[in-house]
Structures are given as structure tokens and as C-alpha cells.
Image (cartoon, rainbow, N blue to C red; front, side, top):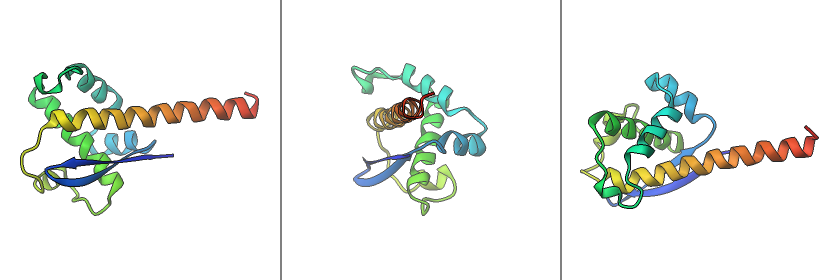
Length: 125
């Protein structure tokens, strides 16, 4: 099961998709653990006022990579590299988009956990 969300970036509606395939795609593309990276980004963002967060360059790159993978997963016509994809936008605020991507991923994980619980209950496990 997957979840989709459209997020406005630079005046454009951009689809993002979260599913069980994302951790594998991310690991294959960037040799990193998306769970660890998302957790680090969550800790770095000021939830009450995201604009006051201060992300370092490495965190910014993690955000770009995660956003790219989810956008490519939602729309196969997205360019083959994060750089090409990002080149299609003017400057935009990471702090407006990151919380929505984290939320989408959280909903996906929650849905997956609930599905497993329901499956175990229905199968008598």
C-alpha cells in the first residue's frame, strides 16, 4: 500500500509517494538508511516554528535526496538525478516542504503498522 500527497513547490503541484519500496530505493540510490536520515531531520527541525530551524548542508542534502526519491516514485518522468530535478525549481523553503514530507512518511509507516496488526488479528497470529 502506498500514500500519495501533492505539495506545492515554487508554484507547481508536485506529487510525492511513500510506500514500502522507498527505503530500498533510497538505500540503492544513496547507500543510506532513510529511517535514520528522516529521524535526524525530524530532530533538526523546530516543530513550533520550522522557519527558525537551522539545518546544516548535510541535512539539506538528505532532505533533497528524500524528496527526490519520493517525487520520482510518484512520477517516473522526474529526471534521473536529484540535481536535474532540483534544477527545475527556483529557490524554495525547505522548512515549508520538509514537515509535509515527514508527515507523509509517518502516515505511510502508521498505515503499514496498522495493516500488519489487522493481518495478525484476522489470521489469528
